Structure formats: C-alpha cells, structure tokens
Image 1 (tube, rainbow, N blue to C red):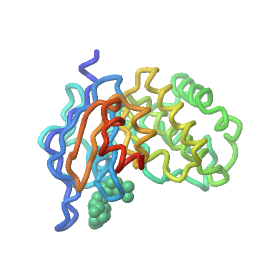
Image 2: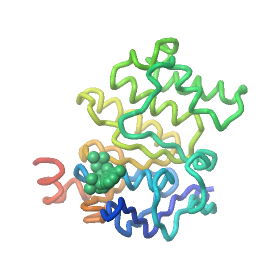
Image 3: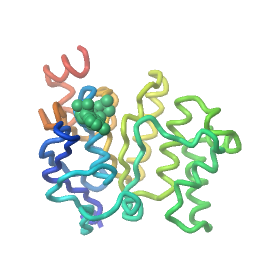
Image 4: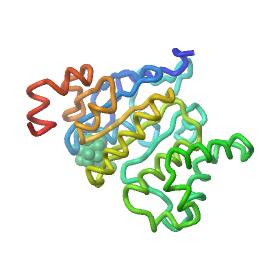
Length: 239
Ligand code: ATP
C-alpha cells in the first residue's frame, strides 16, 4: 500500500568533529513521488543522503520507511528494506565488466528468473549497457558510467532510490538523458530522493524540493513554486 512506502526523516543532524554539516533536518518522501534537495557545494546534501543510508554517524529522531523503523538498520540492510542508493561520483567498479557491476547490485537477492528479469529490464531502460555488457566499466564514458551506477542500484528492486548528483560532470545532452530516465522511473512507481546542484534538472524531475543552506532548510515548496521564486531564480538558476 501507499503508506508502506513513505520515507520519514525527522530531526536529522550530522557532525564532523566540531563541524555541523546537517542541522535538525526534517522531510518525507511520499510513495511514488520524486523529492529534490538542492543547495550549493557544501550545503550538506551528500551528508544528508549518507546519513539516511546509515553510511555516516548521525543523530535522528525519526527515520522510517513505511512501518519499518530504520534508526537501527545498518547501511547494507537498507537495501533489503527497499532503499537503493546511487553515490556521488558513480563509484562503478572500473576493472569489472558492465554486467558484473550490475550483478553486484543484486547481492542481496538470489540469482534466479526474477533477477534475470530485472537485468533484462535494465538493459531495456539503458540499451547501451546491454550493448557494452562485456566491456570493462572503466571503458565507459562518464554518462554511461552514471547509467551503470543507476542500473546497479535498480538491480536490488528498490521502492525508493536515493540519487546523489547524477548530473555531475555530464554534458547538457546527457543531463537531458538523466532527466528522461528519472521521469521514466517515476512513471513506473519508484519514489525518488534527488540531491543536486543542478536546480533546473531537479525542478523538472521532482514534485517538491527543499533548498538547503548550511545544513538547514532555507526554503521548501513545490518545484513549480520554487522555480518561479525570484531568490531561487537568482541564486540557483542564475537568471
Ligand atoms: P557537494 O555538492 O560538494 O557534495 P554537499 O552539499 O553535498 O556538497 P556535504 O558534502 O554534505 O555538502 O558537506 C557539508 C559540510 O560538511 C561541508 O562544510 C563540508 O566541508 C563538511 N564535510 C563533508 N564531509 C566531511 C568530512 N568527511 N569531514 C569533515 N567535514 C566534512
């Protein structure tokens, strides 16, 4: 049901030594929706995603996905609870073939007809990965590696996908491809939490957004409202 897929985050705080990177952040990702987090370099976006995934120490009041309390769930078990993660900078295994990278994304599942079907779906979503399945991931372009990182996360059949700056370092044409992929995933019912410096992409890909500055929510609203906000236009869209 819809309520079993809602991510709730309340009172999330991250410190690095004396530096507070995320301060008492609260938000939720409703089932089937795409929510964006935009902000400048160093605003705390990556720390927020890593903290949700349990990859870095954090304090949090509520962290749950549907009925499941995630506050004590380890990062590797998050995948079993239906949450996928596409890290910043892609981090594909460059010395392994494309297909092997994808199969590693299914480590929490048994290898059977269902996982084979998921692999086939990913090759349908990203035909170039199918064409290059035997090539080393290191031989792919930046854009192809980003597709591979997304495909790898999809191999676990997540119900919610966390994406950290998928547009980073990509040409405008490839950013357009990323947008199409995100829209397609959303149309298939996947919930998305998209962290980006690219506000234009984020407004197009999401229904509502948080604007984060110095680890705190500076503004929030629907993506349609925010893209017309004069301050947002000046600071984040350069208009
Ligand atoms: P970027 O776009 O560069 O990824 P960001 O919005 O994701 O930026 P974070 O990477 O979450 O921001 O960083 C938030 C703050 O925490 C910054 O001031 C950063 O310098 C600091 N920070 C991040 N990682 C560490 C770390 N490992 N040790 C100390 N400080 C850190």
